[in-house]
Length: 398
Image 1 (tube, helix red, strand yellow):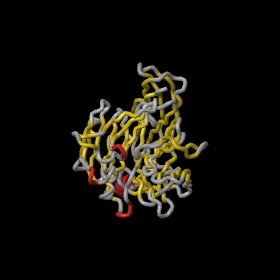
Image 2: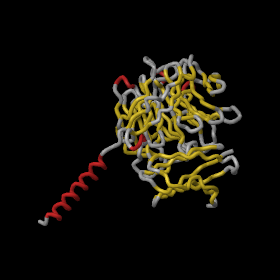
Image 3: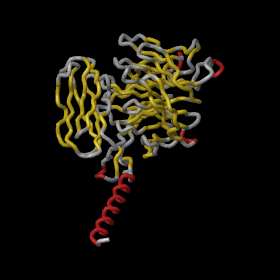
Image 4: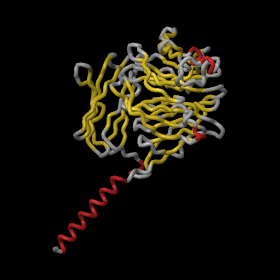
């Protein structure tokens, strides 16, 4: 073989080896060790279920204290609802109404704008629920919730169902059993809502299902096992799909590939119960733990690529919050530098505004959109990055 050809072949083989190895190398993910954990509220008997609303601030439950509290930077902690019927998990529906797992009355309830309460789920096949715990609202308006049996009023002797379940309330109000677990607890969706995660606290495991046709879950898989002393409770995801799981003395951060990225450590002998994203940019994590509420900005970065986490794919995430009034955040990821265009259209297809039109580096990018000057209604956000295009539906409610 000609010497030049041999050198060329050797070069190609080395190049192929390098490319293959590079593709298999994952960025080393680290947690910002300078992130400051701040205690913002205390003297709470059993804090749970935090949820953020830009107009209201942070709401969170006090299960044993039988109250819902409100916290704002200006006023601090104040009573929002007393009594609360031992409310646990809190979230908002598509119309901005508060939804709660009301354990004292063994039901899921909606708080109307006039202050009245509308029961959404009280029984399954004629039998009372155990103690509805945590819940999440899907972008189609359906509500997914867990129903363990460790807080049944009057104790286990009053249990009517023979199992602990995961349920769905359809937009029309139908109640559907999705699956059963030993002790289902925290629940959350992946950013694109294609998967749902549920903690099985008694088994110290996190399971994941595919969401099929927006209405059923299938292909149950064990996602992650928490050590025995790491009792998994509530959890949330970030725009990249990482899970923030509240456990004993820490919030565990787990990647979509089920790798432990790091922990947000809490004061000793303090067990975290739940968490929620909030503040104007939704990058602050509020954590209920012990007898207090904490907040922290746990930026996840990579020790490579100038400290930036390089995503694996092009992706446009669902805006958050959605519905919104008047502001929302729009997040997208690009694995390579590209010219990016982000435009907003109304329901007729008319272009409303351009939110981004520039060359952006590889990474996760977030835009903030204020629709104060627009009319209520449905809008569409379209992302174009290189040859990739995607769109999402936004709902603006004044």
